[in-house]
Amino acid sequence: MEAASSYAYVSKRKVRHVNRFKKHQNGNLHEESRSRSRSVERVSSRDLNAFSQQDLKLPPLPPGDYEQEVDTNVMAVKVGKELEKRVLSSGDLIRCSKCKAALSIVSKETMNFADNVWRCEFCHTANKIVISKDKFPESSSLDYAIGVADEVKLDERVEESKDSDINVVFAIDVSGSMDEMVRSASGSTTRIQCVRSAINKQLDTLRDSSPNVKVGLVFFNGSVIIYGDCSQKEEYVSWDVATEFASLVEFSVASAGKCMKKSVKEQHDTLARNVSSMYVGGGTALGPALLAATCLAARGKKGSKVLICTDGMANTGLGSNGGSSDKTYYESVGKYARSMGVAVTVVSIVDSECRLDLLSPLAILTGGSVIKVDPQNLTETFSSVVGESTLATNAEVKLFLHKSLEFRNEDDKQMEEMKTVLCKPLGNLATDAVVTFEYHPKSSKELAAMSDVDLEKLDSLPFQAQIQYTGPDENRYLKVITSTQFVTNDKAEARKAARPEIVSMHAKIKTAELASKKDLTRAMTNAVVYARLTTNVQEYQKDLEKLYGAIQQESQTTHLIPDSQSDSLIVEINHALKGKKK
Image 1 (cartoon, rainbow, N blue to C red):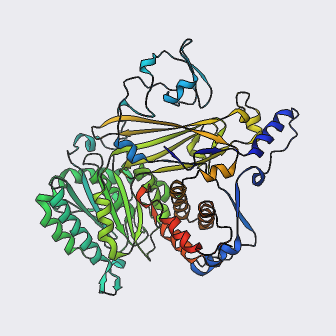
Image 2: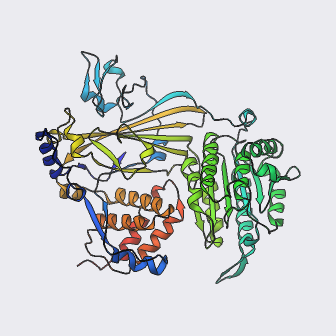
Image 3: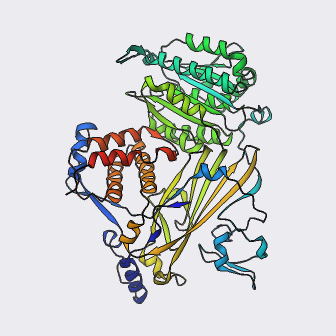
């Protein structure tokens, strides 16, 4: 776990105000204003309007400032890299009876061995435990074997017939719009031809590098056609099946049992012929195709993948109603895929009508991606997705803060214990998977009511990440990572000790998350305030075209952000702001 600064920042104003709260027993003292007690930055509507009207064609924002709290209270967990270094604990997993934080090397400071009492460093609950000093955790990162993963099985036959190697399933949109021309300096082609070339390249690569992998094909327009490994005759999904979840799962699982048996080495030429001969025309049954492809992939071992490529909105079958039921449907597919250890990546063609905001839950739940790409770059995109190795499946993370803190800018539905515990699904994990979060002190009223918390004497704070995951051996593990940070009341000291690479990593992830939800005003504000934090630029140019370009690009990808790409957003922002400091 890495911090954006050597210090956790708690403002002097906050400390003073909490003390005043404690002295006012009658409760008439008002909570301090957000802008006075916290690190709130303001962005002028002029800066945002300069390009929101020009590039996004949005109505002008009303005059005024847009506020966002921003400081160096940011943490990053490089989940993938942490899972690469598994250290199995020789002791038992012991958790706090109240908040469920795990006993760790940090707990030595609050452990009374004479009385066998551990006072949890997070919620301060006294826990009666029996542990010898030689069994006490000695590392900041430890793994515990906690048993076999619990599976959500929509059909037992999927689990009973698991293969020893992964499956890679390509679900390809062959609707009429895929025949549109793509022009470049090197000539003209069509979207579907770009897809053909990209898939055939993956077939060649997999045959040479991973010959035992099984590759499946699903084509969809107004209908869904399951080819699988092309060893059997293709099967068409009927209309009544394509409009009912359980029926479609049953049909697709049965198809997988017949047409996902042979490796890419055996079926390479037949697969390539079918890819090269696919024709276009008709509507877009994206929803049913996605579920069918997931069922085919689920026949392989955990870590199997679905790559679905489309240029349109679903308009046929499940997931095409246009209402809240569509969101529920795609979330249900994501939960099913995650339970089976399948990562789903959706690749959408640029300048198309694909609803990435509806499909983004698939990436969040399964550890896949939702990407918008130029058709001429499909080969590189497919290669990146297919070639990415999976370290763990069905993963989720719980993050723990000290009781005086709370998570900032997170979904309330994912938080527990008065916003001091945050739960996030991760799905499948690759080496470069990263999770970031930000935090701040609780309100002065809440802090004043805590008799066991004195901000003036608080010199360090604990942080913990618990990552639960299924390993390659199908066993379930829990990795516990714990760290501490010194506390400072001096904002300048916290910023002086800042690590720009962690700040920029978080800025990129949060900006992409907001933009993918089509909340571009907040996305733009977020990017600007974090740029201000890392560059100390006080005045911004009116024309933020490059900044908008960075936001637009990040809005096209939803993913657990690879560490190798973590600074790209700030680089773009710095280009936009270069030379504008007064």
